[in-house]
Image (cartoon, rainbow over all chains, first blue to last red):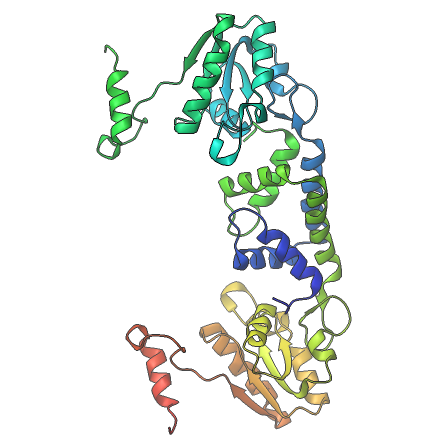
Length: 199
Length: 199
């Protein structure tokens, strides 16, 4: 493309670099920015710079924070003796939405994935082991995704934590609430049967 | 959502305001921005401000330009005596991609649409009439979209230009090249028949 003024082309290119945004969408987004008020465009640009410069990782749980301890680690209402280990900050958000868990988190920022050249040292595993070794931790709940990599990561960490004689648990597998048995895959049904409970 | 640090939430909101970007996509885009290098994030923000501040409309044809005359109006190779009237700057890009047209353009920035409260005065119609009245124009090609609003806008402008005794034409209707007759709608087939030519 070379039919738009250079600054517009540049903006289209920037949008096209975003994940899931193709050429046509990038064009539409760039034209939308042109149609914004000066104020709105400035706010958009500032939001990018702000987020990039002020969002860091919590020194304790590695969750995203706007500086210092994250709101969960800083809260006196949360049980610091329980750690829920997740792969991604978005998983923290998912758990928090469920409004059931009252402990703290540890965000790995990924899972072990030899295919993508991600090893244990690329993740926040050392900081987790340190937390468990130093603190008064009763339980570590492994809440990585129930796929191969999440599974392997959970197993790997569980083994690392064994010497500390802390209780390590894993989220239950089973049929999702509101799901249809008919559409459940075999592996899920096997796990749901295995984990069945007295009524 | 209130599970991410405020600057990140703000960025998610900004992305969610863009057309065609839902909540989940906005979240993914915001996290992508966090993963950018400082340099890349700055370039993205600057591209927004740059495009917004430096892209204006060409004083002659109202196409987008980075300042002053647009590259088409400024080119001595283009025939200034022919004006192709389009609704949107993206239509100029489409015409240019076809590499057939060598005249100039006039961008209306919309079409007459009573449903959306867009009247003739909201469009660049006056500037077109002025161009035709002042300049040495041989032909005005109406290239608005072949839908109801584009059609009505073309008819309206053709009537306005009548006093100037300039040749006003409309893009041909017919079956699109590479299309399938079997999938062509009735209206298109009727127009294709009407516009048939000697081989």
